[in-house]
Length: 330
Image 1 (cartoon, rainbow, N blue to C red):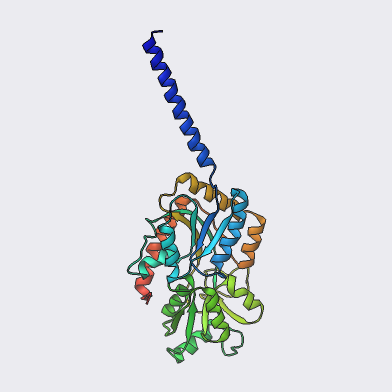
Image 2 (image 1 turned 120 degrees about the vertical axis):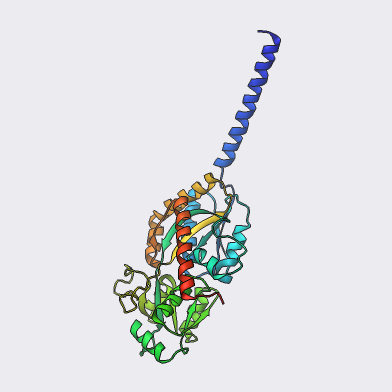
């Protein structure tokens, strides 16, 4: 073989070898994910369903991924503070976020968001649905049903209040939908999370709350809160004797709080798939199933594409509802 041809072949072999080495290095780096702890942002304070779900799944996922998942609570502005932080985070798979209905609602509630819920995030998976419950103080002998709430509120417009975990949360939306359909004049009192709202409800500073079954049930079981109705279309297996709001007399009422996970936009598909697989596997573990049952959460699970389509549908739905109900962030 002429020297020139030998030289060409040698260079070609070197080129292929180099390319193979780079590919192997790339695959090795990808396969190593995660190499350090993952930060899971919860945009509300500890104590609510969102926090419990993140911590329970995070613990199970960390066993499969071989790295710890650190839950960080970043409350404020109806979840917008935590969401904005994740939207601006590096898209490397080391920052993820759990969200609720507010992800689909906030674009219609807030005139100026510092992030776009659809464009600034990469979907990972739907997680679960957790019903809300209309509750009041157990000591209130004058209130024992949805009808009692409606009748007293109509007789005394503007007198009664309902607490929420913040503007745009499912707890707020449940109350706003209730007052809209019932044509009721009730004052909305937003808090920075479910925990402080329940504290004031127990203390009598507010009259009602459409709290998550997760944080409300322990107080119901302890005889401190009285459950009046559940917000979902069907009764909950956790509290099967509790009627829905709709069957209690407010026809057409239904609100199903959902939870899902997202990463910053631009997070590589392979990393998203790794996280999705870990989440779905975690939801099938016995410990997570037990915890979900304890807090009244019903597993959903999804592909990233299914979550993307679901978020778009929910955003469109709530845009219409907010316009019709006049729900405001103010």
